Length: 130
Image (cartoon, rainbow, N blue to C red):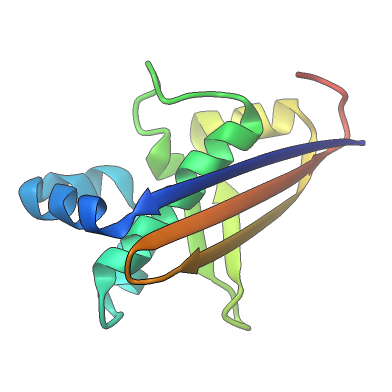
């Protein structure tokens, strides 16, 4: 068994400015389900910042970065489960890396305040690869 862990923190105010400055950022980075969830909240920017932190934490947990990967952030999706607990899934190239590592459990936690959003991703894999 192999554990992979990633954590990320996002300053909500800076993230809000980025979203307001670049309208395409939301559709470029977030899946349709993520956009629907975030836009349904009182302050969508806090929820977008939290989901962005998840995407960064997930990439860290897999040991990969963003450079040269088209749509990698769209391949990482966080949606609320039936209980409200966030569910994490990987698709496309990110999903392929996950399968290569034998990932069979994905856990995500998101927390936010008015100023910061933080996310932690823990993956459990069956293969002992780097």
